[in-house]
Length: 286
Image (cartoon, rainbow, N blue to C red; front, top):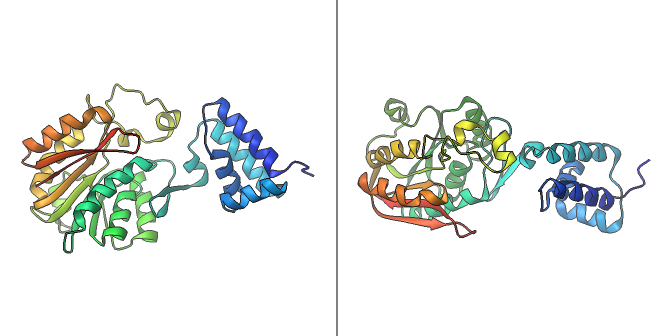
């Protein structure tokens, strides 16, 4: 019989995770997942000195072992929060980050004035950006994903959360594939993308990124901008006058992306900073 309380087990887990560099609420989040409850309920259990149910304790201990080995929290729980929804995630798909919510906000600011907007989300991954724009902007969204594994995750999330999205398993540079779903020259109100932007020679610092995010969602050429370099002229063709293009990127890439967009014929290129003050999204107008 377990004489320990939820609080004892969570505190021990928190200490173990801190030793491997994981701070924050992961222990409480794993406890809530294991118990099938919310974090608030777990904190009540901790305050009241209640124990885990035996099955929940086994799940919790196994989950802490996995997290201690730096498996992403979202892979363990199978869920990643993004804006107002929770997305199914796991091996083969990039786990959406809070920073990418800025890409959505930049697009939403532009789309508020649009009538019946059409948006192309390139490299949709889990479907996070596409789903947010479909639900919050009421846009017709076409989401493109080339990776078979990521496409499978996007299909599940879109079916559950925004079934009106057109999901295309293709390379966004395939004009015939886009035309087949009604995307052609001047047809878009916005093209958005959180593309791979890590240089091939770079090694991401976080073990969760190195070990679990798919390489094709991370790396893009010598400078990390190979795909963006292709997407800028593509966007110039597909986006209607007055429409938006917006890319997420690394902090040091903003000037290069502004130059690419201006060279492609866009104007008013601006870089937006995330909540940490880092350059994160660059957008421009056609």
